[in-house]
Length: 90
Image 1: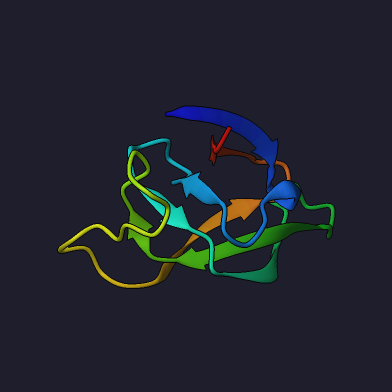
Image 2: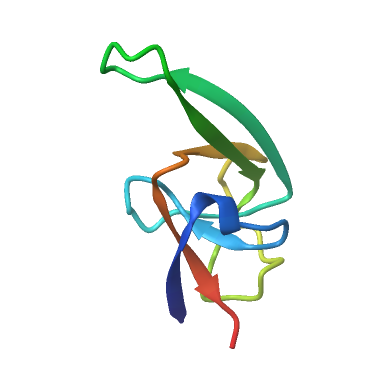
């Protein structure tokens, strides 16, 4: 399986992405929700957050293979400055 690193803003519906902690847990993105979070630096500015919602899958299999025994759709949350690892299909 080949992967690539992209900005959180480049993730699209249907992408298969790795969890933010870098563990071997993957989701197929079926929905995207935006939020914001205050920066911890006292500036009064906010981070844009991306919540990628979808089921856990086996990235080595077809993108539609849901992992047995894992809960249904949930989300991975990334900050706007985070890099996302996604499966490259070519």
